Image (tube, rainbow, N blue to C red; front, side):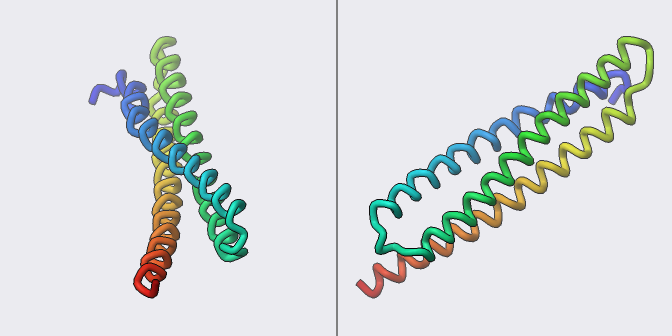
Length: 133
């Protein structure tokens, strides 16, 4: 790729991150519904509330890291574009911030994987209740 157009690269990553943000935010909203369900059924008890709390924290961490990635990609493109416009070389700034954004995405994805594993525990518990029922 032409080093002069490197500043465009972070912008190309934004739609994918946007999809992750949207799906994560939707899943986070589902936790809100589950919390209301637990409030309406106190017999579910503290273990379910603790489980939901852990999942909420993972979703929050994932969303924050994805938002940070969006900010880093936007600033990387802006800095690279400005550097090119004034005749400088913004390669290292653009590459550095893009790499930081990618690391932020990876952290968010790890948090989402951890949340998915917690959700599987809930499914397994419900299926076990059905089998015994």
